[in-house]
Image 1 (cartoon, rainbow, N blue to C red):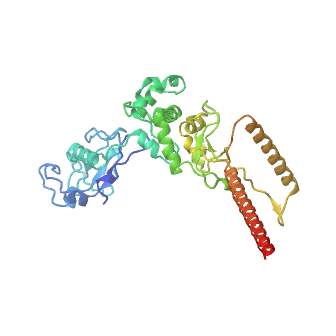
Image 2 (cartoon, rainbow, N blue to C red):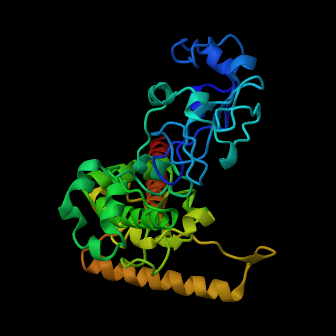
Image 3 (cartoon, rainbow, N blue to C red):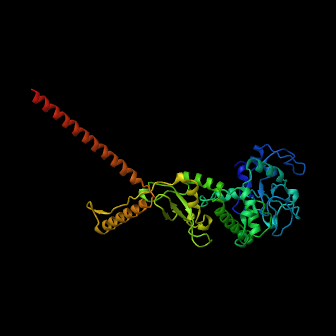
Length: 386
């Protein structure tokens, strides 16, 4: 039987613990539960056949004792199903049953006398072995949300940072309470689903504001350096990391795109989970702001391009376009130089190094020629002297 960690899990709906269906008696014995905890009408827990299996009746979760109510409202509690030799605690005291598979229904719900209350014990064990998971932690760790960073609690609770969002997010206050883990509303499933949807939307809108702050930029830079947003698919970019960006600041206008600072182009995310993220959750200014604050991250641009060839010869139309592009680029670079603006390209550095090498070779050749001339002249003088 799994340990106490498997007795509870966090559902996507929030902070509700859901217990496993059956807890074996051997597990309880292995935990060395006290006799006072396993008491039942004065009898000692000497074996499984005497006190049965522990089961979980569906209902509202921890908080209420087992009941004899046979209506639809069943209580979520750990109760002991009595053995075949004991009464089931219902109004029919002569009835005998033992259900090892915990097939409890509304017509045979055990009475309080048929169960042993384990609420405080299990809550204590679960809390100590499985610390509470906050909504933000669950959201960030969910598949498809890898592009998001964690927003600081101080930023989320500062109302100034949330200005204007109350008109854009349905159930705004409930959504904010859920994001900040103070949500306490007994809502039905439909309403809770709407609140959770609003909470995700609210987090995304706040995220767009947070990532252009100093703290937010720092977190996104760490993710950028780790390559959490993916690599540029362009071959000549050599796997340069990408940055998420939006083409609009208004929600529901377009989905997130990925920007490469080396080729200065944008791409669609590979994963369908990421492709569904609203671009407004990152905004149109984030990637430009990041390189303004961290200029050292700006990569050297590359003017290399792929040239289609047939048997080694460049395709005429493509080659003509490439020649025109090269000529146009040189004209623009000349205009920039005249204006006193110097733009560095990776290829320029290579060309400069090649030119320097050529100059050195020419200088060495000239020096060698001069030395040879001087040597020949000296030899001639010596011949004349003879």
